[in-house]
Image (cartoon, rainbow, N blue to C red; front, side):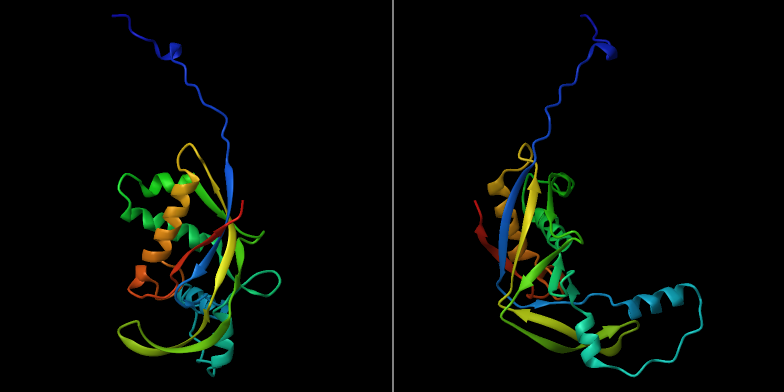
Length: 201
């Protein structure tokens, strides 16, 4: 039998044709925000750099609450679309035959130039939650919550790997079993759940 030399082998690749799917998701449970504010990040950095700890500032619940929101360039409440992409990838655990690695490279969520998508909502409020931190120490967290929410964004996908129908089915599954934001199903809660509302032709 004639052996095929390495240099005789040919690999044929078709040009990549990416398709774009505009979608809107609608919340089926309230969405809780918890963006790391600059003050908290600086405290962590100072601790890692062994800087002397500063005295704890007087708590400002209203300021803490507002700082938990992500905001787009217009100053409106928004979500990072990467948050939705991560939910899509995580949902793959519930789908036989798909792998997280495959989906991670087969689709991307697109927002504005900063990677945000505006959140439309009917109501918002400040939450006051008791949480456990460190060695079981109790603390109070002030977080933003919106209800009656929806988000519109684009999904770029490779149709040779995953179809538009599969993308939407996976998105629905992500909304049902994974969610986004704090206390979502993936983190033992039931907030931040959603479903696909519309697909614009």
